[in-house]
Every structure is written in C-alpha cells, then in structure tokens.
Amino acid sequence: MSILDHEQVLIRTGPRSRLPVIVAVHSSTLGQAVGGCRLWHYADWRDGLADALRLSAGMTAKCAVAGLANGGGKTVVAVPPGVELDAALRRAVLDDVADTIASLDGGYATGPDVGTTPQDMAVIGERTPHVFCKPAEHGGSGDSSPATALGTLAALRAVSRRLHGTRALAGVRLSLVGLGSVGMRLARLLAEEGADLLVSDIDPAKRAASEELGATWVSPEEALTADADILVPAALGGILTGDVVPRLRCSAIAGPANNQLATEAVAGLLHRRGIVWVPDYVVSAGGVINALTLELHHETPAAARERVEAIEHTVADLLDTAEHRQMTPAQAAKDLVRLRLDAPSATASTEREPARLKP
Ligand SMILES: NC(=O)c1ccc[n+]([C@@H]2O[C@H](COP(=O)([O-])OP(=O)(O)OC[C@H]3O[C@@H](n4cnc5c(N)ncnc54)[C@H](O)[C@@H]3O)[C@@H](O)[C@H]2O)c1
Image 1 (cartoon, helix red, strand yellow):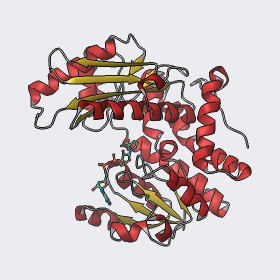
Image 2 (cartoon, rainbow, N blue to C red; image 1 turned 60 degrees about the vertical axis):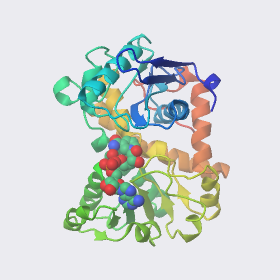
Image 3 (cartoon, rainbow, N blue to C red; image 1 turned 180 degrees about the horizontal axis):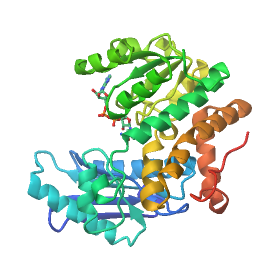
C-alpha cells in the first residue's frame, strides 16, 4: 500500500516525546476519517508507517460496509526497540498525538487500539475534541467490547439463517476460539440463547467461567478444527492459513478477531471447500459503530444499538449477494465498499437506514 493511496499522511517527531507520530488519513469521502491510535514497538519507524497505511485503508472499508458516514484513518506511534514508556513519556506521547490530530482540524478522530486505552483517550481529549471511546466519566462510551460482542451475535444470526433457515442460535454448534473481553461476553450471550458451545483459550484461567456457562472446554487446536456449524475466531489474527483450511470441519466462519486470513488467497480456499467466511471487518464493526454513533454523531443509545444490530442485515445481504453472483463474501464486501465510495451521497448517513448492496 502506497502513501499516494491516501489523502494525507502526517509524520512528525513529537516535540515532547521525540518519538515518530504517524497519522494516516486514507479517505474522507464518506465523512470524517476515524481509526484507533496504536502505540507499539517497531524495529523501524517505517514498519509503523506501513501499519498505519494498511490499517487506515481497512478502516475506510469497515466504515463503508457498516453504513457509517465516516472514512478511514489511523495513528501509529512507532516506539523504537528498547524504549520503555514510563508515565511521563506516555503523557508526552499522548499530548503529541493530540496536537497532531488537532492540526487536522476535525478531518480525523481517534480512539483506542493496540497499546492504548479509553483512559488514554481522555488524556488526548484534553487537547482535542476529535476522540472517541473515552471512559463514561469523561463523557465517552468507554470499552467497545460489549458492542463488538453484540455485533458479532448479530452476524452469527445471519449466518445461522443462511445455514439453517432460522436466525435463532439455540442448538447451533459454535466453536469459539478466544475468551477475552469480546469472546467471554459473546459466550455469555450465546449461552443465554441456548447455543451448543465449544470454547477455548490459551489461558486456562478462563476455563472455570466458561464451564459455568455450560460450555464445553477444549484446546485451541480442537476448537479450530471442531465439527461445528460455525467457527468463531475471537483471539489473534492469522488463524486461517492454507495449512489449516483442509483440516476445518465447520460450515461457516464468523468472528471478531482482526485479520483472520493469513493471506487474501485463503478466502478463495475456504470458498472452494464450501465454507462460508464472513470478513472480520464486517463482523467486528459493532464497537466502532456504537462509539461513533454515540460520540461523534451524538445519537441516542437506542439508535446506536439498532445500528450495531443492523450488522445482521449487512451480513445477510453480503451472503445473498455472494451466492447470487457466485463470489466470496469477501469479494461482495469489497464491491460494496467500492459502491459506497463511488456514490457517497446515496449511501452512508447516520440519519438513514444503512444502504444495502442488493443481489
Ligand atoms: N475489543 C473490541 O471491541 C474489538 C473490536 C474489533 C475487533 N476486535 C478484535 O477481536 C479480537 C479479540 O479482542 P479482545 O478485545 O477480546 O482481546 P483480548 O486481548 O481481551 O482477548 C483475546 C483472548 O484470546 C486469547 N488467545 C490469544 N491467543 C490465543 C490462541 N492462540 N488460542 C486461543 N486463545 C488465544 C487470550 O488469552 C485472550 O483471552 C482481537 O483480534 C481484536 O483485535 C476487538
């Protein structure tokens, strides 16, 4: 991905922290660019730049498919190897990030990502209003995991309808990999629905809580290759490799974990095996939909919830389109992004029903 695919990229040496602060604005075609602030160690700052370029383009796609009136951006602070962020340096970094965002004059807003928290967003919010997911006591929507879990549940309903003709999840065999902030909440929601749950995590401390839900605890490898209706990746990325695909025994895959495919070609391998894969950026959009609807578009919690639950319709439409056009859901999602970016006024608006791609 090249810098020239982006509207603008700011690369600054933070005046306080002396660390490289990178803000990539990929697209503002649909509205203010949004994307989290990643504070991470990189061997070379150019690796941080590559991440910012890739992730900001991903945010454009995520917002477009979700029907949000927002574009994609990303902040990366590339911390060099060996530099530890004590409280003073962390504060300096966050102030540098805030001033860089403020210099864009509302063109871009940030939120939490790997290495930053809602509390960090409150610090950034002291210098610029263009920030979301601040803690509730600072007027924000806080932790995005509950909305991400709710949006994933909505996606799973659409997949269940595709597989079994009903959106109900009672009795549906789901295999969940990763019981973190999102995964554990999702497991609870699924257990309440009466789903038949296999669960796993590399952290054995998660076992007791999952068994209390009535779920069956298995190893991550068993969960990945389980004979299930739907595999739900909710841990780290890269779980779906060319080697794993022949061993899968699920009918569909839909989960919140980012970047599930080791390479783009894996979407085709899954399709050829008849396994329905719903792109992660569609499934996991609940958190960002909720935060933006509440904090940037100033709508009600009921409106935010409705938009998160609309992921069910988005996924249903993508699956219908993919079947009708004999393409992968990944390709159908890409086409939807292009459609919305080509005709922005006819698509994203937080005041209208999310536009849909009809088969
Ligand atoms: N939190 C959100 O709102 C949100 C939004 C969009 C996407 N996501 C993505 O969803 C995924 C989960 O997010 P989270 O906030 O729950 O993260 P988390 O760090 O709270 O949880 C991840 C869990 O996965 C487990 N894990 C790690 N490697 C594993 C493996 N190989 N096998 C099984 N379990 C493993 C960890 O022990 C942990 O319990 C991530 O990929 C994240 O990027 C999260």
